[in-house]
Image (cartoon, rainbow, N blue to C red):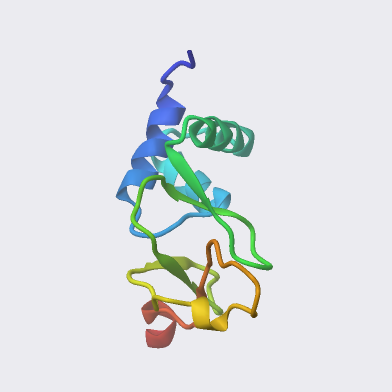
Length: 124
């Protein structure tokens, strides 16, 4: 059984309050406000532990570092800002992608990433 440390609580709080998937660097910055002195190794160690426990889900975006969000969310996709590299959740799904599947193949899952500019970058 793993201990519930101040660092792990801070990381969980940051992820619970985030409205989008966060990179390890974003997590470090936000957790540092709660626990000064928290280091990158602590972030990675706790991300691995929280993922192993099933509390955390890895968000994979091609060509980008992994992002992390709470596990157990309904099926959804992501939007990546090409300017600031922030990832955001996109609710909904285009639905049945079976017609795009080659003949004789079986579709088992899909991931969809939208790319563009976020509101903050558009305003700046």
